[in-house]
Amino acid sequence: MKFVSTGGRAAAATLSEALRNGAAPDGGLYVPAELPEIDVTELNADAPLAEFAASLLQPFFSGDELEAHLPAICSEAFDFPAPLVTPDARQTNFHALELFHGPTGAFKDFGARFLMACFDRIAGQHPLTVLAATSGDTGGAVGCAAERRSSVRAVILFPAGRVSPFQERQLTCWGDNVLAIEVDGDFDECQRLVKAAFADASLSAEHHLTSANSINIGRLLPQLAYAAQAALRVFNSTGEKPGFVVPSGNLGHGFAVLLARAIGLPVGPVVLATNANRTLKEWQSTGRYEPRPSVQTLANAMDVGNPSNFERLSALPADARELRVELVTDEEIAARIRSQSREYVWCPHSATAVEAWTRLKDSERSERPWIVAATAHPYKFAESVEPLIGRRIEPTPALAAILDRPQHKIRIGANLSELGEALHRRAIAA
Image (cartoon, rainbow, N blue to C red; front, side, top):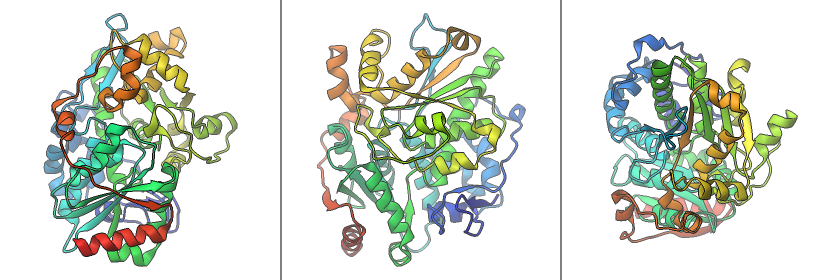
């Protein structure tokens, strides 16, 4: 399979080239040149997730140097569960897809580990410098997945004062091949710096830059896999295509679900739940996409005013782009966490999706099963969630282990020259 740029001015790339490049040379994002048509009757939804993912993703790896390694990559990336649970026994049509059972307690663990497993096999003589902007969860997952790998050095940019205390600990606690950079600016400034670094040909070549953000197609493929398996399991047991409600920040997660539907998986209506960052909601209302400065919210990992993956969304066939956007305020997030805490404790991001689901008409909720993406463990946001539910949240063993790790970070202004200096110092130190 070949991959082409949404910018339309770069040569088609193999999968390995697309993974290694991160973003396309013309500044666009890689998408499949042609969407494969998946025969769902050939997929075993009851297989372990690693086995299911290897079967589903094979067409995307076809003809690439990584094709023979795909089963091993999936075994490495999908070695923890993504269970479908029923949070409220009174709502049998309502399922949560728990994506927070990995080492850093967020869905980003799947994509980060998948991508690093790929990099181990394509890096070549020179270690890749994995440059990642994060609004909270991506950076921790990338740092954890990259730690102690000789194939990569990870550089994580995060916005000063805009991540939770535990998220910052997760961003800054990894080993010597991981550098955390606190940027004077919001997530969109961090993302702008990453794109500017890729656009600087000399900087990119000197440091062998690649990306671990969802601008890298390798981050989206594993998200496609677990969404597809969940959809197929529900469809096989009910005969109905489940709807999905997905918390949306940079739009990678939502795009993966839409891609699953576009290639033939039994996915019904898709609802994107956003926080008070209005870009996607206004696009749906007006038909105009107008990026705006990000707004700080309780669901901080979704504080994105210019979602990168909108380019990929726009590249889908028109019928595959059908979706609904629901905007959820901080007050509604808090009320949803508080009101449902007896049945289930949601993180702020997952709570946006639950609130969006409750807004569906009764007939919409009853006519089909619905899957809400539960994207992060609530312990990561304990300082926000615990006062709402009136009790302590216990960390998983993996999250508890992070508390004793030493932290290290540097701080820079939101400009490319300071980022370049930081990359240079890091290269010398390595």
